Image 1: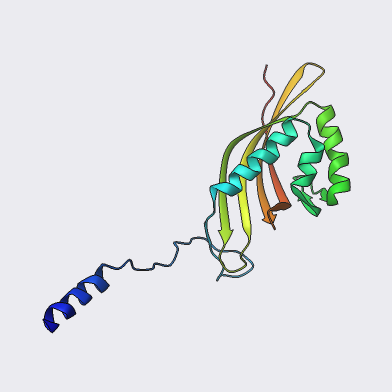
Image 2 (image 1 turned 90 degrees about the horizontal axis):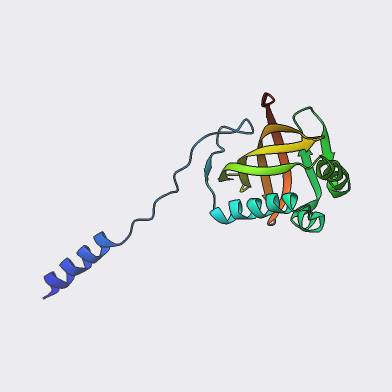
Length: 162
């Protein structure tokens, strides 16, 4: 009987789920030991809502989803520091009838630094004086404490439609 109990115990232990380390990839210039793993879709849902607030021209919602000391690095080297500067830039953005259309997003987390990021592509369309202009932006968007804290924007200017 003891042999059967031992056999059952061994079988049970071998069938138990083995805990595996999460699959990671990549590295950072901050250190070769840094790697990344896929983040949560809750993060991309948050960024989608934040983009929607831009399209709805809802300044209050936009600012409520950002940290007060948000830092935004634009492709031309301009750096926007804080919500006051960001709200001034948004006024110009709204005046040019810009809309954001996200076309891809990927949430990712840094393993060592424990940072949450989303890398996303947006088509920004403006219509000034009846002329449509499309610019593709890709942004690395960092979240801290559930709020947007930093954005690094890259740009691809599309040719104007004829």
